[in-house]
Length: 429
Image (cartoon, rainbow, N blue to C red; front, side, top):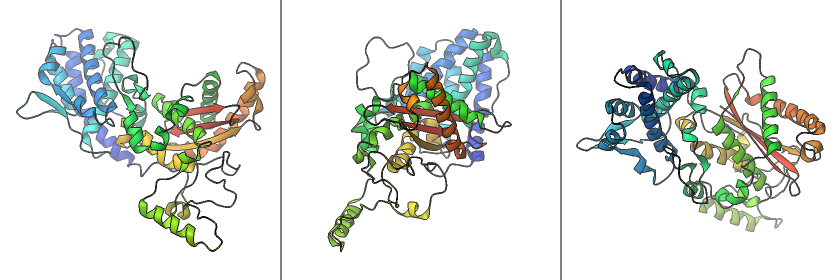
């Protein structure tokens, strides 16, 4: 599929983050070097700031998320009783600003993309705090005195976990006590899905069956990721696994598997004028055959309602779009590949900021790799079959794995007894 939109120049994205990081580093240094605070107290302040920023970013797509963009200054001082000025300064460096004449710090959301310095400031602060906390956990509190690096790249953004919140909003109400300091919300609220991707929201229960993966899927994604890295140039760094990208890729794989048996999910939305034109053409065609709904269907392509695509259709790789595809409507699973994936990634703050990505989906059939589908994941025939599958997919995904790519996420959705196929989705950034 096509990369979503025009990715911003890497220099522009990096420059925004660099400016934000250079502003934040002296403030972080002042907190960590403050002799009036114990190292544990400094880390607690960092955790407080991290949680407040995460609450804002996680709820960006939620219509009710505005309430998280305001913090009462007196409330901050109540939560942070010792030297709260450090936490206040870090919140301001993360995008919050004191509203004139009030007691509120407010995070101003002015748009999308790298032009939004507020989002850059928040992402940079999260990356830097994650570095400090990881260092303290790994090497002890004494490591807090070590210098802080202000450089931030796409790999750092892709690894952000946003408080480990769920990707999709849970249908069931939360039960039991919440962990203290936990971030509430979901990156993709149900109300957002219903508004932006109604064809997915309507069958969300079916799609969710493929989100909690089993042993077979986990082993498969690890083997495929390893095969992809084995084919990379020896001078290039291995692609690292990004947890959030893996969640999105798994959701996309499940969506496509469900879409292949529900053609209504693969209908590209039209305007009333387009629908009227379609009906007019259907009524005036000489041979009486209905119009093709404006879809692009090449000879040999499967129709949108087909359960299984042809072998020529099974693989849809990124690349240069033909003029025909640019000017006419899409058919079948391509609708989800080229319209749904950018929308889903828009819910991830790093990609909403403009982190470039590429996506591709492959389909493997039972008739091609029978042992992969039917043997136990601990049996030798399964290992042999998986090795062949991983080799084939690594070759197919090769055009996506450029030197600029640094992280990946893989999703694998398998359905036996109904579809007898597996959908494997790769996202690289």
